Amino acid sequence: MKKIILSLIIFPAFVCFSQGKITYSISFNGPDFSKLEKKKIPQKRIDRIKKSIKDSKDVEALLLFNNKESLYFVKQDMSNDSKKTINYTKLFAGNNQKFYQNFINKDFFYQTDVFGDLMLVEMPPIKWKLTQETKKVGKYICYKAINLDSKNQKTIAWYTQEIPVRYGPKKYFGLPGLILELQESSNFTFTAIKIELSIKNIEIEKPKGLKKLKPEEYRKLIKKNSPFKN
Image: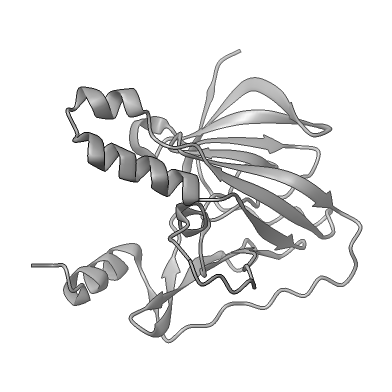
């Protein structure tokens, strides 16, 4: 069957579906070390990368949704570890950011800390290529979709039409079904490990910020104020 190219057009959310909570487990797969060795990267640097990956434990994130809006955020670890190291899994899973999607108002953005101020950064539409390739994630049949905006098209989503809402983790949304698994640039994998669809009265607090920025404005602001710009 011919593959379909989908340029995201914002449609109203599936109002027939109610609400739920999805728990994702995020893992860091790490780079291909054989490629690093071919690039003649010093072994000490490769060893440091391997240690960083070893210290980067899996994290969990939540996606709360109803028939109007959704909110994605990483569950925070409340433990007080005196030997804290950078967890790259948590960092790339979203860290302290909150990702908001609203198909009724066509409002898509994430909240992030910019040098001490909370800002909102718009999330642009994604161009997806839908395929007929399927696999099961849990008990759900999922279809494969490829993010055409990602470098070398390495970001792949698996969505199920059995849960007909257009939400997903982080900045990924707009498919004709809920994203249950996401492979981001081959390095990070998001997998739904708990799906709760019968929850009542889910309250979604819309993130607030000092200002809403377009992605290019955000990049310019970071570059302008970065201590490493020189």
